[in-house]
Length: 214
Image: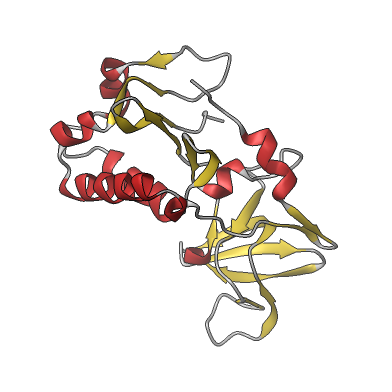
C-alpha cells in the first residue's frame, strides 16, 4: 500500500513574495469510477450506515496518527476502536463528509488522497502556526467585524494565525499586514487525512488518519 506521499506534492505549492499560496485542487472527476465511489461514500456517511460503510473500506484499512513513533493501527477492529462508527457521538461521519468536500488529489490512476490542503502544505512551515485560506478574494479586515475596514484581499494564502475571536473571526498575519478573516474561510492542515485506492473489487478507503497530539 502506498502511504504518505506528501513530498511529491510540495513542488506544486506556489511561493509568493509574502509567503505561500496553495491553490485548491479537486481531481475527483478525472476518473468516473472514483467520482461514483466518492458520491456513494458521501451518501453512506450522511446516512451514518455502518454496514454499507464497512463495504467501502479496505480489509487492512489504516488509521491512527501515521507518526512512526506511534503504534500501527490497521484493520477494521482497530478502526472501530479509533472511530467508533456505531456510537451516536462518533466524529467519523462528519469527518468523512468534510474530507471529501475539500477535494481529492490524484497521485496516480489507482490512488487518490484528501484533503488537498494537508498533502500540499509546505513542510518547512509549522502547521500549528500557519493555516490555509480556502476561499478566493477574502477581505482581510482591520477589526473583527464585517463592516471593518478592508486592508487587503487574500486568495488561498498560507497565513500566520495569531488568535481567534469568539469562533467567528481569526486574527492573522499575512506578510506585514495583520487583520481578521471569517473563521469559515480559513482551515488548519492539522485535520484528518484520507487515502483511497482502486483494489480488485473496486475503490476503497484504505486510510483515515488523525493528526498526532501536540
